[in-house]
Length: 223
Image (cartoon, rainbow, N blue to C red):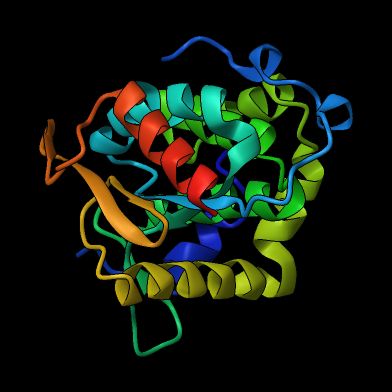
């Protein structure tokens, strides 16, 4: 059976327009050393939940970089789509992708620690063709200690209105940032690198993990 909001997405008629586990490699929040006064550097990945470029982007760049700069960034996961006149959202890969986006936004809302919500999103993205099958969501929720019932409640609250409002806010954020490609990585509110059609593009500082880490650390020290 599909996730609870799947039927809602169809009712609203939304139109179509692996890395290794990393939790153990980052200290638990309670065990982290006291933060310095340095400003956390904004780091953001803009994706579509059913996009193969999003899978490559998270696996090849975002997750391995986060393993090394976790304590120095304020990480956000945002989504790409088009708001519609009926207060819905149009997603490139159809209503199932819209639902996948909402589920991943709910994980971020309920579990704001990137170790949890980013790990859950990567788990989903590894099998992106299956999104939003209930079995995939349940397996990824279990793997990352996420309460499936709370995730479901978030997605279908107010007959899906809350989840849809979250998605509209997220895609609007991406649009206002000038982001149109999944996956686009932004650093310090500027486009850093784009993964599109199986290739890295517009990455003047380099598309390697070490390149991103160096860029983050430079901004962190300068703050």
